[in-house]
Amino acid sequence: MTLLITVFAAVFCTAAWYQDVQKREMKIGLLCWLFWGASLMWFVDAIFAYRKRGAAYFRPTPTEMLNDTFLGLSVVALGLVIWIVYVLIKDPKGIVRSKLFNK
Image (cartoon, rainbow, N blue to C red; front, top):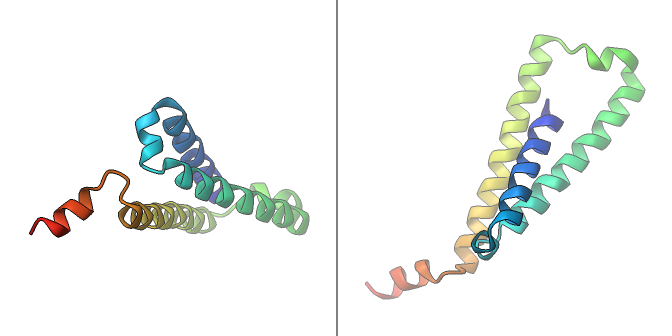
């Protein structure tokens, strides 16, 4: 479930980045890299979990699925927080800088 959530987030961000040049100014590429990196990490984790558990890997309990869903959403939320902090620091459109120095 964690892998699925991060792959969906990565695909969505990549499509948004590719579609609009203005979004490239907002550093959506960083968000793509974060989510694709997380997806790769969870994919490797899934491979090793499958090697350890075998076919039981594909029959998770409801508790495991709920925990994986919360973990996936937490990973997406953390990626978004990192991206927001990065955008606020870089300030590509100068909005934060203008608000800070105009007061």
